[in-house]
Length: 217
Image (cartoon, rainbow, N blue to C red; front, side, top):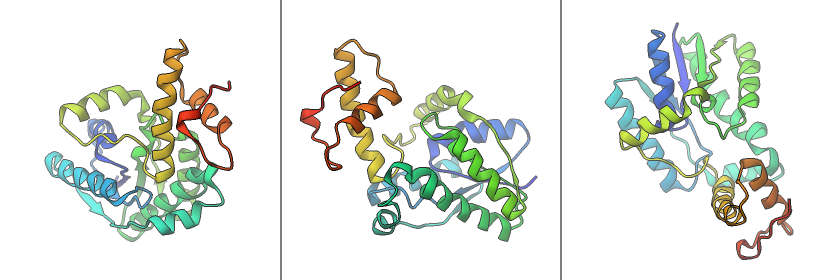
């Protein structure tokens, strides 16, 4: 098996590399993530992965691409579905193209590790592209090692990002942390679902004033 592992960041790769190697599968990491903004964040994640790959002696292919304008232009009409309609397909297709051109017969992604990503959509898109390109999609539910991987990433001193990648997820993450604090003060356990619901309920013409957020369950 010659496996290409699309890799979103170093922390998410820790458990994936570990478990694949335990199965005697040696992955080649593939970096292509033009969804990450701003550039300082993009650079921090990319450079951290480069250093971690050297440390773990795992091959890494870096396809550098950054473009805030291009990303915003392509998601402006699909903000609510930007992940599955644009972000995932954009990155996966580049990985499949590289895999096809360079003799890889199998592909997977570290996005299957994150408990915050749309796991089923990721698997669905990868499976469809696997059929299109004639490459096997190696499905693994890496989420089972979420805590273990995060603990190891922190122990290794890796850069731990605070949001998924794009400017819109950064906004949601910042608001989400503030809302979570408010919910805890009210004795309510914050979840991704109820935090997102509150954000949506407090939008007025697409704008949110963090100081005026009210709980609307």
